[in-house]
Length: 427
Ligand SMILES: [Zn+2]
Ligand SMILES: [Zn+2]
Image 1: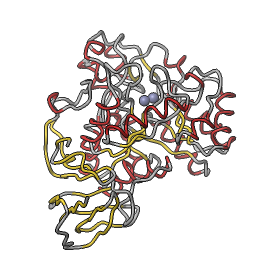
Image 2 (image 1 turned 120 degrees about the horizontal axis):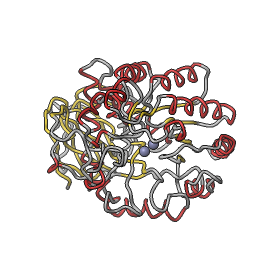
Image 3 (image 1 turned 90 degrees about the vertical axis):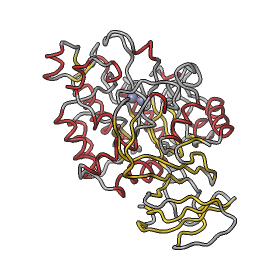
């Protein structure tokens, strides 16, 4: 099968391409980038006025299967991924049971292959059963194709155990993704500690509950010589710690979510429980620091932390509602707002949502170089659209962005040379 993408602006930061051109896909691979390609037997996609970029890769997704298929299944999660322009996602292991063994990794991969939507790179847990007591069998996980481990949802509380886990991961060349949270310090908190938590009378979560563990895990990673990735950075102090660590030559990378750069603690005055996330939405000055971090390269990646929850779970009092919001279908548009703000340009945005996640995870993708696997996302950069319940592919609807007018929309997605999204519709 041949696909010919005509007249698009091809942006491939890795190959140093940014030009108007045609792109030909054949047998699942990028065959040729050239102007005015003639190919009679190909399916033609007209990409005039659009961007043709390497498929987006989400390093941080919650798919909920097995265990909570009422919130999200692998299938619905992958449909949401494709709709949002992602050609690969990395499901976090905090399912029921947690993904800490080969059988479960295989289950996830087989299911994803069967659906033929986005690809899947399952993340294994750091500790057995995510219990924080003993290190998971990382050799087994690595053999099953796992590239990264994480106990996301929790930090590994025991610093000695975390050090050993980092050493073990380093030996196997596995990335360790850290959810940084001192649970005791965060306590029963539900929002960022600051002026607005006082005004609203809500239990506070101090920034230090994140940044202390960021600093601890950076030091432990340096000791172990491991590759550490900090999940969902939200606080200015964390950005500063990561910037300092990079200066020292420590191998740490970091991600931010679109919601942490779009929304602030003050927004919680609506008491919308869809704004309850962990880590919490921070202050205006934190957001400024996150954007500076994105701009100067301290923050390498934009990842969704797509966290589906049922409507009836979220329709509780703020204190009792679960943490998390869905994000796969809005991530690109929300992040693209950074371009209008002058924080990033398209090249650096594609780096943070495709090239760098692929590089950090050591997975194929993140490039449109000739011969590369044809994972391609096509974006209409100027298209304005309204995010509605009707458009949602995820099984859950817990998003505070419903009704928002967004700019930049994914129109077509090709995974492994197969069209999975065509003019906004899943094929
Ligand atoms: Zn987390
Ligand atoms: Zn998460």
